[in-house]
Length: 430
Image (cartoon, rainbow, N blue to C red; front, top):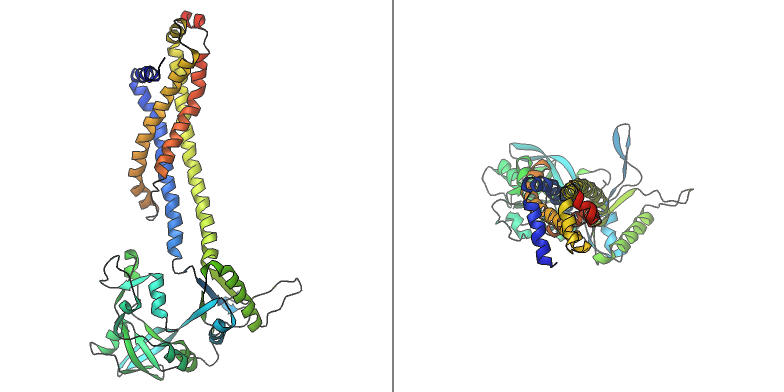
């Protein structure tokens, strides 16, 4: 019996029971749709993790002071992470190319009769490059998809220079809203304001910014800002040297683990950290790289994806059991037909192929419709999961392949049972 005839016979067998065949495919449709939707949710979760930590570049090492809670307050574990620690790091750590530092505080900002109570950011001169790399904010009206540069963030004047940071110059840069509140439409560049008691020359104004995430724009207060050199803020506003946040940029991102080890050794020497009685170091700083953060988060996201995939597999197994049940019923109903075909010379392999092909056709049709349903349900899944669902093109052939395997697996037993029927007993079957 040729493959064409086998296929034609299988198709006619399914067509004779159209409603039953359609109901049988529902299990496969739901299973395949579940596979696609669940994989999309898993991909979305992983993408969300990536997006959450996009501020950590592949060549960056984040260093911060380690703190513990005592009497309801955060207190440093040991020595502070200071400006001088960061300043000496590039020359002392071979794999560190440069560092950027920042700290935040609050101050009274005054110009003539206008006084604002607001926060300030004390930073190194590469703060705008940091803003470009994070991609959290963009100038209002910036063309979508167009590349951002540090110059795009400057609305008037300029940002302070590395030389001004080294010298501790009394200069500052205002956010767009801060400039509007203090100067009420006048040009602030070249004018003087008071930050606490320090006279500060305004050298620039940041362009009006908005959050890159449209859903976060209503919360953003990024334009109510004041930036100054970190060395100036430390000298003017702190009696003792404060703790700062340090970002180290390594020379070769492929050697970031080695660079991290060098930074740890450097800071232990600076802070005189020795091994305790158990032979361990009790560091007073925390070091984080992108691999550290993403490794833990991606592990959680992968676990989530595996659980979702397991749920989808259960749906497919249920669909496969439905196929097996229907095929067993079909074998019982067509016992005399099978006996007749065997009596007139059909091979047992022909019977196996016919019923196996019927099961595969059921799963294939269910797979095709399941793919369509799965793609259509992705927007709904995204809406229910905070927009985190991404269709992976590879999930479509994967789902179809799983559906076909399901048909073969659960259709094999009914096909073998049909082929093993005794022709004489089958002909006598009523």
